[in-house]
Image 1 (cartoon, rainbow, N blue to C red):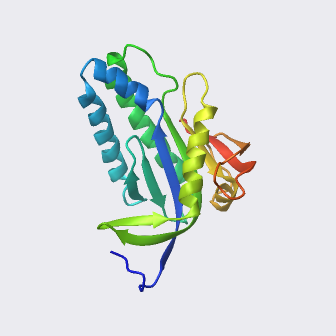
Image 2 (cartoon, rainbow, N blue to C red):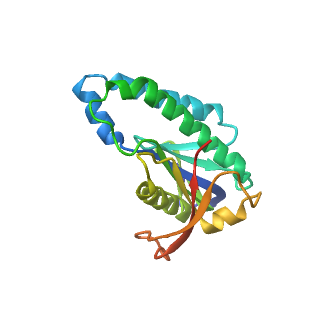
Length: 203
């Protein structure tokens, strides 16, 4: 456990927070037919895909229906987005093949939402686990929440990335479709009319 007399450990990361859209609705529907094992297996498969890319990022925390991922600050923009695209493809395949046939009601929207920011994080050991504290985690989480409102035609698969993070990553151009947005982030200093980029996570 980190003690108050130890040297402060500060690291820089790109923080990705992602969430499965409509997960509560899906779980409640699977409970009716007593097939929660299917949802468990979807999450296990997602974790396996993430672990296949574990050399590219740190799987920091699981939150019940999504993860917080920490990428190195020099990660290339297209590598980052392609990694998220592969995670999205894995989820959608399993959803359509294994989950959707068991649902009575089609959830809306379907897919994943992502929030992305970068910055300095304080690293510490607490309860025998590595923990991180910092604005970038809070901003990424708030951006992920706002990405939900950008779903269209029943699909999510949208990332919101802070403007500073987007413009600091190379290359400047990306094959993924992007558009500039302004969103209000609650409980974030300077969060009013926060400038960011919406990125469509599609093949």
